[in-house]
Amino acid sequence: MLTSMRRLPLNTLPAFEAVARLGSVRAAADELHLTHSAVSQQLRLLEDQLGFALFVREGRRLRINDAGTLMQRAAHAALAQLDGARQEAAALASGSRQHLRLTLSPSFAQRWLLPRMGRWRARHPDISLELHSSMQLADLGREGLHAGLRQGSGPWRGLVAERLLASPRIAIAAPDMARRLAGRPLARWADEPLLGSPLFWTQWFALSGLALQVHPVATFNDAGLMLQAVEQGLGLALVRALLAADGLRDGSLVQLSPQALAGEDNDTYWLVYPPAQADWPPLAALRQWLADELARSAQDLAEVTALNPPAETAPADR
Image (cartoon, rainbow, N blue to C red; front, side, top):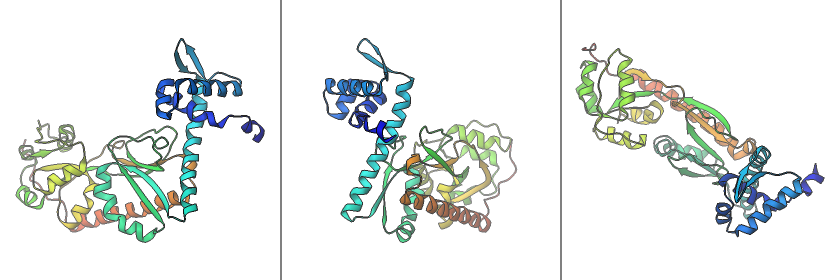
């Protein structure tokens, strides 16, 4: 094993991985700040040393073959692991704290994680979190990230995915609007200023047997912004219970109905990370802390609902 690894020109792997990922020698050369010929030479050196082709040459174009695809996955994981180890080793050598880079959506960062950062620091003062908030799905290895918090059902190729919890959508409003709606027929809610996806509202009303045409006054690509709009009294919204939990507890939000819209795939939160990071102590600490804090949030939400039951509505007026 060691003998075969010594024969593998490891310095060629970045060029190979970049070409395989980008599908172009020229694009890889630009990314790596190398010449076109230097990248081509490194590909040839790697193939010569391996003894088999990684690409099919079609004129000036390269198309990765099955053997190349297998090697690209291994090279991508290996380079990501080496870069992570390099950064952690540099931190240890300088005597600085351990550093964990996490990607997550803006709404989850704003409405759930940030209010709990004090408890993270108290529990793990030696591990700093670097948060990368984005609506785009990040490539952990390419962007030097250790883990990500994601929604949906995956799969996310090359990553371990640990299910955290499912959080269905509930109807919420600011306190003044909730008081005004109390006792009104559910069908009349469609005449109120609705916020968010018309599809979700249509599905939510259908749970009560109502087939209604809904026309929201505003839609949002970020749940955090929609929650701010609700708190300012701009309308009713369907949001994930987890993101609304703190507002329900402090009274800035009111749950309007016990009815919840559950879509198993889209409602589920996951923690994803490269397999090589599974036993890394900072990530293990994050996994346990997330489990504890999410359980605490679920308990808080159950207690708030018990103390302040969702507003009752009059029978549907069809």
